[in-house]
Length: 218
Image (cartoon, rainbow, N blue to C red):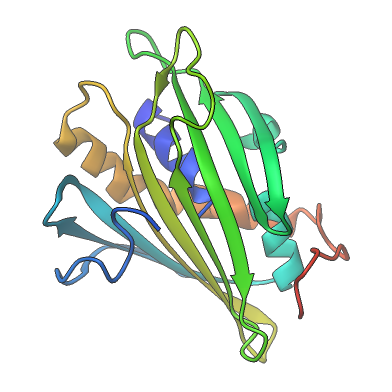
């Protein structure tokens, strides 16, 4: 797996900021369709990097998905090349800052990322939405790492009556440094399929089966 795929992997777990859906008037272009996953991309008028949208569906409870998305420490186990993953602080249920660092292949400098994450649920529709965005100055920069300056993402989890949950994920990232935009955009076009499959695998492993996420109504 390439180091640029890794940027997509660290972002798939956590979803306001500079490039969320609805902030661009450009139409979505279909990039890839595979089984129950569809990937779209579009250029943004204020950035050289693409915005990516992934649509999928899985049989799960809302709690299981939310627990997987918010299990920051678990990324050290399953997300390739993760050095450290930890929650920095909690402000309320479903709202916290977290930190990730990743080992990049030489000669690329290792990256780290500080993110604010927040989750809300509509009490009528039961739809869960999460937002995440980079807060690079939240904690002191660490020697040996390049802090990712811009990251934004949003999950929308829509429960269906037949036991399926529809997932929409919109994200954008500027990894910082001298990486060319065309290379980052290429990885952004390919990586979400792999990373969404990783999310599916965690759910299907049964790790969160029967568990209840605080504040979530099924």
